[in-house]
Amino acid sequence: MQSVQSRSACPRKHRNARVSGFRQVVVCVALSVSGGLCASAAEPLPAIAPAHPGELGRHVNPLIGTGGLSYLCGNEFPGATVPFGMVRLSPDTIADSGRRATNTSGYYYRDGKILGFSHTRLVGTGAVDGGNFMVIPLSGHDSEEAMRHGLKAPFSHRDETAFPGYYSLSLPDRGLSVELTATRRVGVHRYHFAASDKPRLLIHVSSVLGRGKCKDAHVRVISGAREVEGSVRTFGTFSGRYGGIPIHFVARSNWPFTSFGTWQDGVSQPLKGT
Image 1 (cartoon, rainbow, N blue to C red):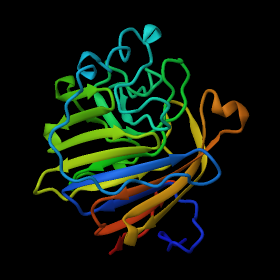
Image 2 (cartoon, rainbow, N blue to C red):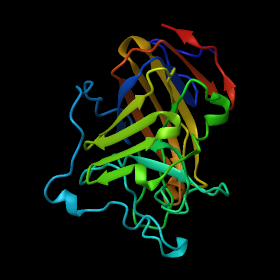
Image 3 (spheres, rainbow, N blue to C red):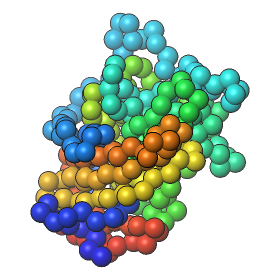
Image 4 (cartoon, helix red, strand yellow):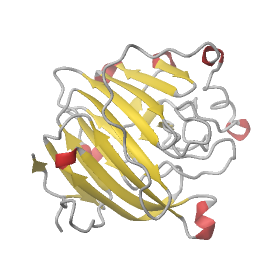
């Protein structure tokens, strides 16, 4: 099976993609739940000053409702979204015991480890749906085989910043910092890696929250355009009752890829250079 297709080729059933070769990268991910893509990713963002909340936003704490007793949790999330937006870009967490989605939106305040950063979720419902297209930032020494289902990196709430439309996290032990924001259809990631590192990004096309399922996952890497595109049919608490929801995405990087590859069912396809 060919691991990478040109733009004119038909996509095949790969579940995940990996790209490498940048120090600071901005990744824009556009989503659609219709039969085809209806939005494209924004152009790479220029360097900007540190983000700060507005006059009203500084009174909002998005972490409220993400913790407490599991059966009383508000099932909120701390990540980035806008009113009526398609994207709810946020970190997903895991407990030391291995339990996921204790907070059904994917982020539980009592969890001690970060898995990655996914784009969809329900909020405040107690039902588990979404967790799609999780981005996992890797350092040069990380094993891809060990990371394909999440980073599982310890983190501290002291290293988090959250206000309406923005989330950031620093992982000092990994020399990594993450910033997230969103528009109505696009999730924007910015990753800062250590200068001596050999960073990589994994896009987990078939990721889901909790015990959700997916099928028909496809991915295609278009290296000349610095893009990865794909789709999946996801089945959660609600969507699983009526045949699942087909979701499509396009991800665009502000840096060119130095190499890329895909894997399916735990089997890697050969890395490609650019």
